[in-house]
Amino acid sequence: MPMLLIKGSFHLSGHTAPDGDTVPFIPDYVGEWKLVRGCEKPQPARDGHVDVRLEGIDALETHYEGNYGDEKRQPAKFGDAATDALLTFLGFRDIRRTPDPHHPHDMISATPESVPGFILTNGADVFGRCVAFACPGDPPGASGYELDVSARLVKERTANYHLLAQGLAYPTFYQGLPPVLRDALADGKVEAQAGIGVGIWSIVADALGDVTVTGAKIAGMQSITDDVVILPKLFRRLKEYFSLGHTTLDAFPAYLAGAADKFLDLTQDRPKEQIGLHRIVQITDTHTVRMTLPSELILFKPK
Image (cartoon, rainbow, N blue to C red; front, side, top):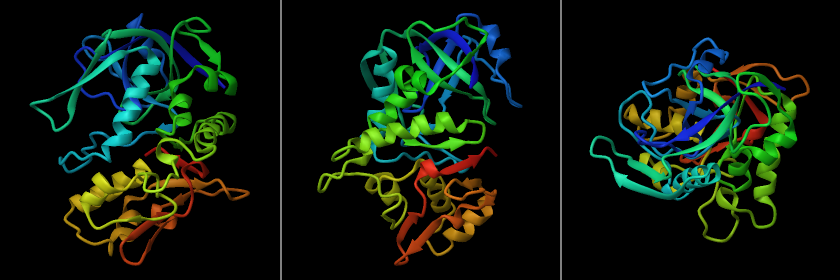
């Protein structure tokens, strides 16, 4: 699939909160941001950086605010590990966290403050973030031009695949990413699950691990911030729901219907667009939430 290649550097200086699937990037030639497709063009900061959202993956939330201003995070173990793994893969070292007096989350710094690399992008999201594959080192083509991105390149060069193979992110796909690259990323989950599994896929007794499909026992906000590991998209919907003042899951299906997320069920021979995650989220025993499909079999439509 042809994607725009942009050469530059990943930066931490002055940026307080990278996470496991988002990192600031500055092109060598800042004008190349204008080449990124999308209805919402990336708007670079004064120093030229734009937050790059990693294509095809979702790591546990480390500082999600949403619509109601009360910032929450998922269990720290895997969210912090994903951030560290992303920065280490890109070439940072000596990663440090210090309290931020203005935010609930920590400031993150590392050595050096920037590392060279490149991104491969097919466009920006509705928030103006550049959605891309992030790669360290020298690019395999000229900056500002399109490059045919293969499954092999995704597996061998990208932080996106690395995080999946380490069991530190979920494959999460949106329309526009072709099946061959979706399949390549899904292989990262398979790699992480091999044997007893690693990261969120660990099946070691008493280990904290993913319960998105098997069922998460939810008693309130603290359950999703401290106790269970679930698909971040499901976490975000639950966080918003509890932020509205709900104390039980009784109205959660209705909330999901109203949120009107659009998606395709990839298990169907001819997938048709569906509206509302209530179609693939079940509530059992009044306090257990589960999704009926793993994330790699869902194709979301951007809002």
